[in-house]
Length: 292
Image (cartoon, rainbow, N blue to C red; front, side, top):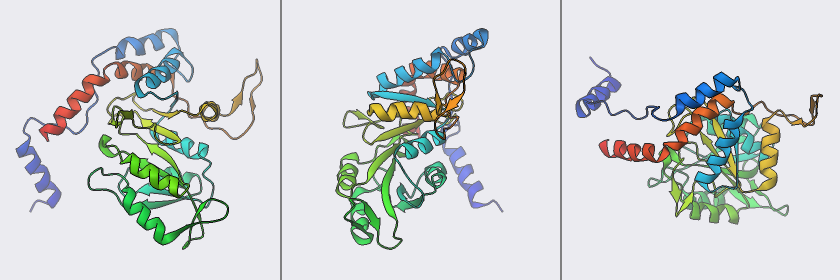
C-alpha cells in the first residue's frame, strides 16, 4: 500500500511528465571563465577582485548603498542580528513559516524567536495580525522599548522573510514596527529580483540579507550578503565578518570578537557570472511558476 507522500509524488509525476523542477542551478554564462581565472591566479580565498566586484554589482542591482559579501545566508542573518544589537534574553519576531535559519540565528544571539502568524496573500508576516497580537501581549515602557508582558523580555526586532520571493506588505509592517519601536531586518534570502512598489527587497529594514545557495535564483555554490543604506553599519559588517582584524603591516590585531564570515573569491566569481544572467533566470522562474 503506497504512503500518502508516495501518492502525492506519483500524482505530480503524472501532471508534469517532463519534470518541471522547483529549483535547479543553471550555468550558461561566464562561470567557468571567472572561476578559472581565480584558479589560474591563485586568488581563491577571502580576498580578490571578484569579491569587490560582486559587492558593487549587488548594490547596482538592488539600489542599496552598501553590500558586504558573506559566506552564506545563515551567517549573513546572524551578523545582521548582531549589527542590530540583539542581546541575550531579547525576543525577535519571526514568521511562523520560514527556513530554520531564521529562528536559529536568533538563538545564536541568545535571544528567543517569537513566531508570528503569516498572511495568506504574501506568505510573510501579517502586519495587521501582528499589531493586534502586540496590543494584547506587549507594552511600550518608559525606556522606549517594547516589552512582552507575559515573559518580561524586550521585543527588539522583527525579521521579515520574503517567502519564495513574494514581498511582505512592507508598508503595513513598517507602520506597525514604527508604532512599537521595533527594528526590521529583512530576510530576503529568497527574493533577489523582487520589488515592493518599485523598491528592491532588503532596502526597507535596517539591514537586509540574501542567500546564494544552490536552490536560490542565482548561486555561488554557497554564499550570502548583507545590504544596508547605513554607512556605519556597512563598515562594521565588513569589520566583524573579517574576524574583526584591524589593518596592520604585519601584526594580527583583532579589537573585538569577530567572525570568519567573508565570501571566498572563487565563490564570488561564480556569483558575478550568475548575476549577469539574473534577468533571464527571473524570466525562467516565472515560466516555471506558471507551469506549476
